[in-house]
Image 1 (cartoon, rainbow, N blue to C red):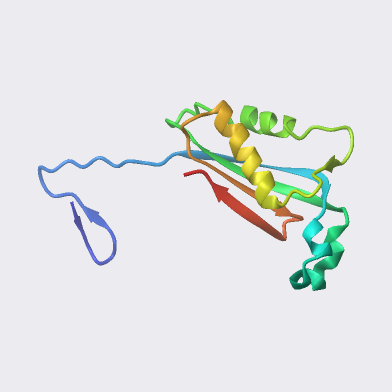
Image 2 (spheres, rainbow, N blue to C red; image 1 turned 90 degrees about the vertical axis):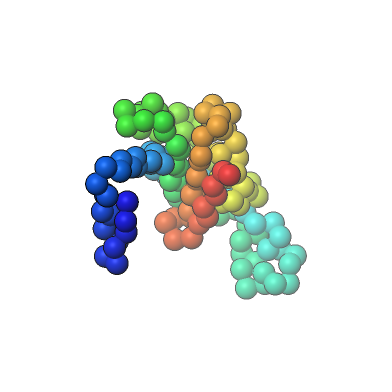
Length: 138
C-alpha cells in the first residue's frame, strides 16, 4: 500500500491489506440533579464562584461510549441506555452532594467496567450542556 499526498490509498498489485477498526457505540441521556462544591466556601482562589458551595440544580448530560466487538452490536444501544438510566432512577431530583462531573464520570466508568470488563469506555458529563468533562478508561 502506498499513500499519496492527497491521503488516498493505493493498493499495490498482488499485495492485500486488511483494515482494522476500533468499534464503539455511544448513547446519551440527561439526569436532573443537584450538587455543590464545598471547597468554594473556603478556597480564596474560588472567591468569585463561592456561590457554588451551596446545592444547586443542573440538568446533567451524559454521553457514554463503549467498545463493541463486531458490527452487529454485541451491546444494543437501547438496552445499554436503559441500564445506564436505571442507575440514576429516583422519585425526585438526584442528590449528588459534593460530587464533581469528573467524580460522577469516574464512578459510572467503574460500574460499566464491572458489567462489561475489558472494553474501552469513555464518559462525558456536562452541566446544562455548557461545561463538563470527559474521562476515558485506559
